[in-house]
Picture 1: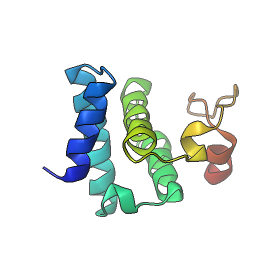
Picture 2: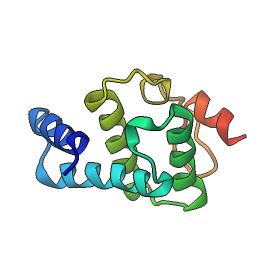
Picture 3: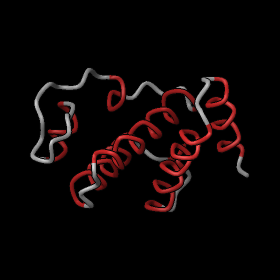
Picture 4: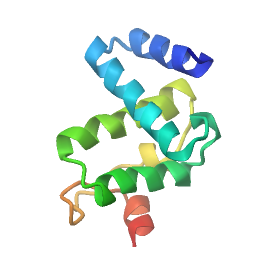
Length: 112
């Protein structure tokens, strides 16, 4: 087990997340790492945003699949790494993309 993974598990336990949620969040980070083949703490905000758009738009992930991926990555970057990325902290727009998922201005711009 990596130090980051252990730290994330501990952070999720402290946050009171149930086992199933912890498992899904860990899977989200693991899939991101598999996609880029780079440790998650070395990825840029833009790379993570591109991955999220890839999962949502290119793979066409169902809302029930997409939501825990987004939440897991958000938890990792904000809670475990203590980041302050606009990708996860900006208020989401009320408008919807063609896929039906709300998007931030940054995500809409990146998709264009």
